Length: 182
Image (cartoon, rainbow, N blue to C red; front, side, top):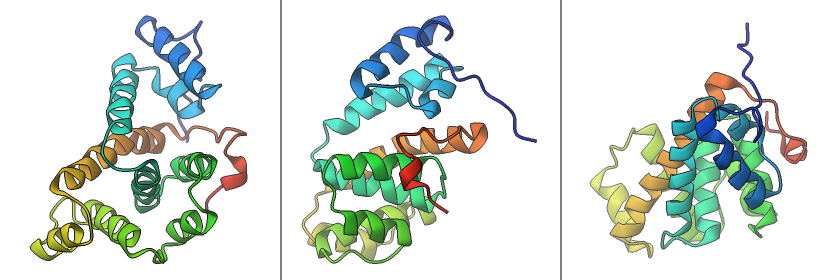
């Protein structure tokens, strides 16, 4: 039986989460159910939001960050994160064909973006044990050592949401329903 989690808002959330949820609403225009339920642990919500801010300041482009987050969401089979990241990525201009390829597990036409997708996927499936070949392939396709570790940061941030969503099973927000996955 599914455990039901409270969908908190700025008035009923635990003390440490109220201001955080207010910040989320100001940033996104609404509070996604995933973050509203995550507010049961203000520290977890805060950690996620701090990492989200750090991720926004990486040297990867916004599209590259979206590719990493969508790949991580698909690789971890998160039925909430895949629609959420898909909608966000499309809203930020990631081409539909790129979003569709990642969701369907097919190769991207752009060689550099494909190596990013593959590196991210291998990082997850191999639990961080990338081979020397994987690392060299990533570096010779135009990425840097810094960006390699930024992929680790992105996957770490996304894993907080993915794992929480696997435990909490939040209902999909209406903003993401059109991107429902599996």
